[in-house]
Length: 233
Length: 390
Image (cartoon, rainbow over all chains, first blue to last red; front, side, top):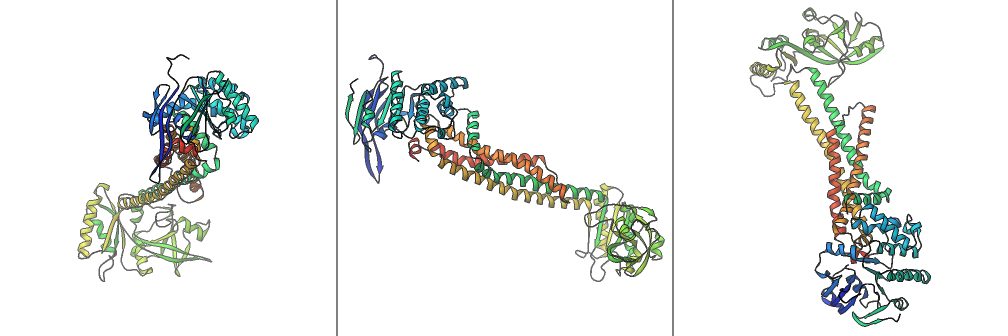
């Protein structure tokens, strides 16, 4: 990575609040950090610290009230809902705590969905879906529905869905939160493997043991960054 | 995302909840099939009546006398004098009533008409055996009768009725002719009646004078002119009294009946159309439930890149597919139901293709219109809200 390449994420003085019963509730204030391509970052903090709100901002699911957010050099605060949808589709792969697979679709169809919204032709779609499903080791389960898969397998399908469109950034919200510790380890191993293949990964968690597996930890408390450190290799 | 993908998604969602989808479609199915069936009954009846009326002949004027004061009818001679009016080809005065007929142990009430010989030509109603009523029969008030085929088989079975005697209200009449079979007209069966000389009928039915006269014109085009001339003659006779008489021709009757049955068809179609509307509201209701149920799904779809219009399209296609598919089933059931009605009842049914198209088009339209609100609700959901919903 050279100095000339702009960082993948450049957040500057981000602030956000809700109006509640006439009073402003500040959730985030003066959040500034940069994340480069290929990093593996954990954002940690206790519940209510504002980390979920931060994830929504980073994931372009919501737009911050103040500050600047450049994703891949693009200021997302000025974009329309439709443009944000396109950004989410092309730049971000989401991995949720509750997997959020569509129950009526098979694993294959779930992974295919972001590519359908991107208007990828059928043949290419098939290739990408099969590639990402074999990467998570579920190619032989691709015609199963989520209810026919274990929690760990469902989360791996979700990972396959996140990487199918080859987005520069994977955003994982408590990816192991709904899994037992053994499958949690499997999922984290898969994430590390993806990081090694060059994917930028941001994990939001309250679990310190998960955070320790990342290369960099950003700690949030009461809506502010209180720590930003690199884990020893 | 293209339309094909939206259709695929809608199909998966419809096929994934078969019972619910079927129940949702039921309103549309019932609506479309009842529109088609009811209108087919209405139109079938209309064309049946039209055929019958046209069979009556469009060159006939029917004069009914209500009279004024003590003169409530025309005498036979006055009635026949109407035949001198310019443009009139023939006049057939009729006295009608009913009698109890008896032959041996067989008893029945029959309708009876007193007629003049001109009846044969004017009504185009001939005998297949024996002779017709003659002027002589009228002159001498002969107790002779013509019998319809149905009445003949009631009283004489397979025997030849011509020459036989029949007791009418206790008087003995000789049957001189067997009428040809003519089928039913609007009002009654033509085959279950007796015809006797009008002069005999005047006495026999104790009905003085003629109250009903059928006038045949020479040229159908002059029917209005003849009608005016007749009105002038009758006005003179009844000194311009209101409602002393009425004259109508079968064309007018046809028009009246047509507009009546048209109204009937419209009313039936309207009622069925309302059920179609109710079906549409059912679709909207289920789609709204479906949107709330699938809030999380919508959130996930939005998170992975679905645009507003993708979600809008998905739900619109789904509601349109529901109503369209329901419409197709409704069309099949409508055809089936009207075929069954036509087969098992005396009603005639005619399925009209334009109505099928209109009903189907309307069901699609309803799917689109009533899908709009739920689809818009889904498309407007904010992704963070939708993802947070359990």
